Image 1 (cartoon, rainbow, N blue to C red):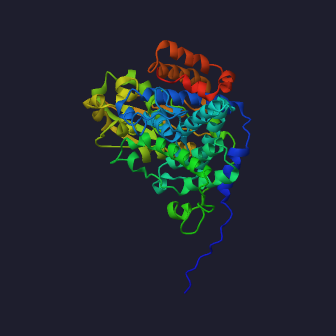
Image 2 (spheres, one colour):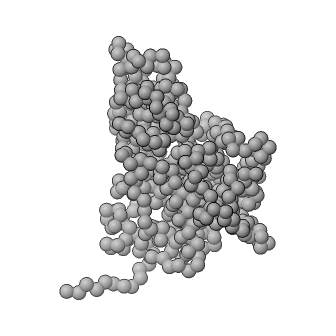
Image 3 (tube, rainbow, N blue to C red):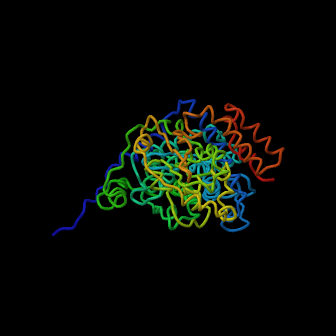
Length: 481
């Protein structure tokens, strides 16, 4: 019996080709996409600056070897660190994701496309500084916004029909793939080189979702995206040095991604790569909390003044939600750390009912020690509304519905409070944008003195002026003096 295999190299997988052509050839003509990308840039950086208040985050930052300074290295906003772009991408990506407060995309797969900014911004700063030092042409912030739009699109479109979580893979696989594509293009890669780099991203080792779910929820979920986007920078740089790629990385029988990790199912891409994802991105404006519970917290805040004086009289709290929320953030029993708590729907709702607000400090141990929280959690009943689950997956609605009704021991009950679209949804963009800018200003002021903060606000206020700013000058605004 012969065991020989056909060794002829195939043509690259079609998805690899489509991604490469998109990042190198597709022009972005949507002004809405660019305007939303500016909001996303500011919000994402603000989330990272706020995270610098937390020692568990900052202990992971800085050069791998203490004291290392890289000439023309990428800066890490809010710090004095200047590092190689691989390490800087990890630093920026970790800051961005630490508080679970940056943007969100929900579909068959979920994730946070602004996680890609770690690699994009570090690479852009490195390129811009290096070119300036050599008398070359710098990158401008419009280049960064374009890269953001394209990374959002790759990650988000791949998430529409492909559920990586159902095979146990973490969504940061898509951060790695999207970041690798756009960063290789930013560094001057050809179509062949982008294909090679992205093929390596697909066959790389991929994180399991172990750290996102009980009983193992932990802080790796806050640095996993930083790890993914920094790995993307490394793969891009290796490719541009001549490292080879693997043309059938996705479809190779037995050994390709689809057979090994996707249960033999083909990856599905049912819409062209354009600017759909950035235009429809979800912002976490009001609460640093897992997005499937955002509208539930809004409901809890509306109920707070009606129930906060009757907490001892509550019999049941019925939360009506959608299937994805039940699968990800429905948790009973003990919660062991902030990463556990911000992924527990019952905990978020309890805080909203108790305090009429929800912010990052509410996940810390001193707040979680309040016995009223677990007392309320034990009274919660979660049920699925199939309409909610359908509307969640509907491309034209993309709602994230939740509803809460509270019944008291005397048999009376509150009205059922239902919210389908969170404040950060595209359908509420006009309402949400001023609040998003307030969030950005507050986060910047948490890190910088008035004079430096005002320079940042002035430079970021106008779309056209921001787009024309050289990247290295933009990054200089955020250096800790």
